[in-house]
Image 1 (cartoon, one colour):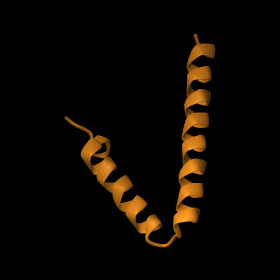
Image 2 (tube, one colour):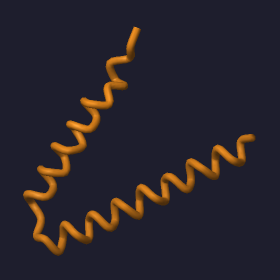
Image 3 (cartoon, rainbow, N blue to C red):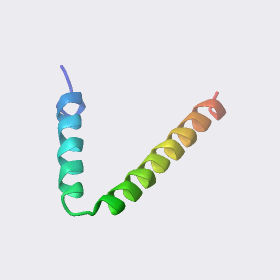
Length: 57
């Protein structure tokens, strides 16, 4: 049986809706800064996940 919490379409739809809601409240400058912050956050989380995987072997 498929886990309903693992629907990639629902996840991407939710993320997209959140992005639109956030963007509607920000200026272009604020939006650019927030995008850069989230990019750095995602990259850092990816680095941590990769390090954990490597160190757990």
